[in-house]
Image 1 (cartoon, rainbow, N blue to C red):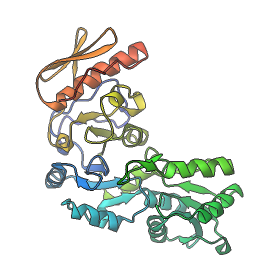
Image 2: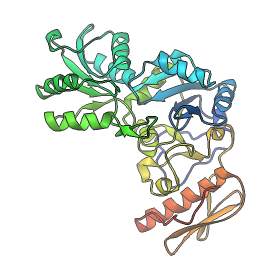
Image 3: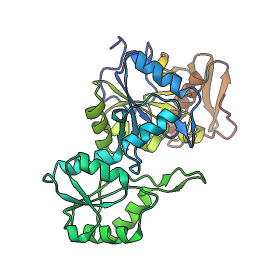
Image 4: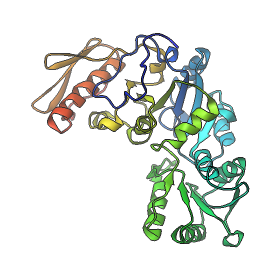
Length: 346
C-alpha cells in the first residue's frame, strides 16, 4: 500500500474529513461498492462508474459489489451489472442473504432446516452455506431468516412470525425501510421486520448494513487487508463502515444531498467525500480551518448567523469537503446543523 494511508481503522467518525496524499486506490486494497446510487440509479448506470471501477481493478484493487437486497442471488446481480457495462463476476457480488446464511451456519448443524420469509436470494445463500431452506411448518425448521422479495406470500409471513414468537432464532437480512422500484421507493424489508417484531415481541439479529456481518462477509469472500466502503447512504453504508471499523468514501451520486450531509452525526460521517467514483483515483486534501472559515482547494466555507455560506471556485470534490467540515464543526459546537437552504452544489 502507498505511503500516507490512515493507519488505524478505529479512527473513524471524525469531526473533519481525512487527508490522503495519493489516490485511494494506492492506499486501500478492497473497494466495497454499494450498488444503487453508486454503480447504478434505477435502470441506468451512473455516468462514468463502469470506467472508474475498471480503473480501480487495473490499479490493483479488489472490487466487491455489496448489496443489502436479499431478493436476487449473486449470479443474477452480476449478470445485471454486466448488462450495464460493468465487468463483474458472481464471486464479486456479496449480498445480505449470504451474510445472513453465514450468521445462521455458525450456530446450526449442517443441513438444518431454516424457514425462509423471503425468496430466491435467501434460498441460494442458505444452500451454499450447507443449510436447508424451507417454507413449510411440517419441515420442522429450527431457525427463521427474513429478507425482501417482491412476490412474498402473506401466508409465509404468518407462519414465519409464529415460529419467531415460539422462540426460534431469527436473522433478518437487513432493516432497510425502503426499496427502489420503477414507480419510486417502496416498503423494504425493514417494514416486514417491524411487523414480525411487533407481533412476536422479538428483535432479530441483523446481517446487512449498518451491522458488521455483511462487511465481514465481503472481506472473507473477496479478500483484502485494507478495505474501503464506498456508498451513497449515511445510515447504511457509512454507518456500516464505522461499526465495522473500516474507512469510507461517500459519493454524492445517490440519496445523500446537502441537507443530509451537513446533519450527519459522528457515527455517520465518512472518512472521505467526493462527487462520484472518480474520488477513488484522486488525492483527498483535508479541509483546514482558517479563523472562522474552512478552506480546501479554491473554496472557503463558514457558518454566519446559523447559515452555511460558501465562496470561491474550484472542483466539486473540494466544495463538498468544505461544506462538510464547516457544517460538522458548527453542529458539534452548537448542537444543530446549519441552514443550507440557499446553497446549490456545483
